[in-house]
Image (cartoon, rainbow, N blue to C red; front, side, top):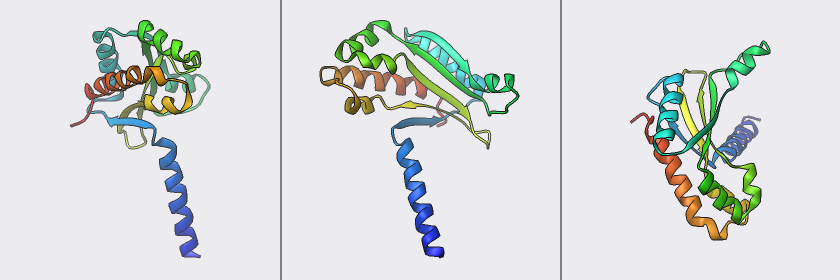
Length: 149
């Protein structure tokens, strides 16, 4: 019985890891608010447009629910995004870009995004591989501005 439980736990853990293996995540050296603010500044400093900042915890609070601080920063560069959508217009469901900032139950603040290279398998982007690589690098550079070292 114990062996079966161990194997089931191992299988479930592996499945959970697989679900998150497409993410690039860093631990922040800042509070949740400081992380969001620092990322917003870095995004603007790099010449991106911030389209929206969604505070999920405030939304939850409005309906009487509790959620640890969880914020999505939605941003992009219409010139680069348009080029990607010309490769495959369905990339419009992915764009603009998003970085999620969240505080876990231990008050640890993380920030991350889905690795854009994942989309090479999901969309017709053969002519846009370089753009995807640049997108990933730009987003990693943004995260480096808040990363705990």
